[in-house]
Length: 362
Image (cartoon, rainbow, N blue to C red):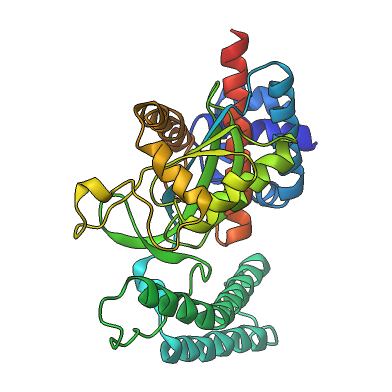
């Protein structure tokens, strides 16, 4: 029954369990999990497949929960805060390889698949049929991941070139050869909060300021938050049917294009105004070349004490949500690929909102 599997995953998510093998073990040891199963046998393959196979259903469930909380007055959309957090993947840094090495790995993977298929004619009596099938499945999956990694190299190359055009001081500097992971081809090396660089995904969350309810979830391969505010606001509108009154975000989101688009929709943007070190402090809130009228109004607004007081609430809203999500096991993804990671985050958002609902009822 999907309700049983969903209940098991919700309980596991609330308790910070991220691997399917642990709920499988708990279903035979823990009374709460045994009660939910009702005597029905459960295995980790079933749990793992169920969690990542129903993204559309989980997205719709999140929308229904948000709608119910809106009807109860727990979601007002008067203030919505967005923040991104980098979450480590299961891929290791050594799994990232350049094109020449990936092509060699692909030849080795294909040879391994062919060898295992040939062994069917003369199977080893000491190896069971189940183990042979598992070996063949692992070999085929590795071949598919290496092929996928090779296919992502042009995308990685384009991202590196765009990054150099935006941030590089010396435009003549050569762009290093792109690399992709043979473990998780869609993962990207990102700068983490501790200053190190590791394979990760960028998780974007939009939180309503009234009661800390998550109203938007997205996962990207982009290591920065620039350009992520507008797509998230559009998702919030699709999910709730109305636009936020105020949008709170940190400086990484504050691009001229997104600020202009949000202000044109009647949304008041609160974000810090960054100033280059070469400029005096007096010029921080003054209009600059290329500013649209909406950006000029945003700069003038952020110069007021009232706007600064509103922006200070962003940390209590967005950062608090990030901390709660971390407690639900979002410290390292055990699944591969953007689609599966997004599905896991939708499940986490559903669990978080249900816990907020229970707290409000109490």
